[in-house]
View (cartoon, rainbow, N blue to C red):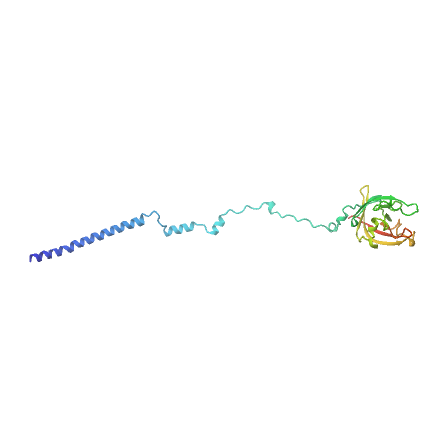
Amino acid sequence: MFILVNVTHTLEQQPKSRTKLIVAATALVLVLGLLVFALTRGGSSTAEPSPDQETMAASTTPTPSETVTDVAPPAPATESATAAVPASPAPTATEASVDPRLAECTAVTEGFVPYRFSIDSLNADEKVIALDLDKDGNIAAPPFDQPRTASWWSGGPMPGDDAGKAVMSIHTYNPSLPPALGNYMYEGGQSQLEPGDLIKLYGRDGQVQCYEYTEVKKIWVDEYDPDSDVMVDFEGDPELAIVICWDFDDKTRDWDSRILFYFDPIVPA
């Protein structure tokens, strides 16, 4: 019995001691858990922002549209930059119709003695000498050794006169000689000038009378009427006539015809 009672006592005391140990262990675990929680949450140096902080950070970040509006507006354009550039005025009808070939031409108010002439289409820029009639009573030709010189008939109208034909003569050489300017003017038996081609006569006082080619005529010597105005004319409209010899006869060593080139004066605009 004694032993049995002793055992019973021991059994009754042992549960109470074990319970205390369990309670103490549980308390210790709770304390350790709280300590760990405090260290991992409350003591962290990189605490994450709360939802309110995230919202606040998002609200302070500029949107694309806010970024554009924050840029300073461009400075207003200056008056000189915004002013419209005036367009160049359109040429008038008179300016548009001016022929650059006429740039040298002058408004000649009275006749003058020419000393030079030029025909661009023939690449001619030559001398003019004033001569009257030859020993046979014909309008004199230039000296024979001057193949490109023109003679102006000093007994007739002048370039720039208000009436009549100013007459000039230019050589044509026979086929046995190198060609003169007249050969080039009627090469191949026809005029080498085109309607509208220009001839310019120059005076020593700055006059430049320009003429425009109009037509050509052939006159046979034995059919020539000295009373006609085909070459000699003091009263008709102002005109220029250039005469050359043509149709050389090997037997007689003479020229059977004359070629006359006609030009109308041009009045500059």
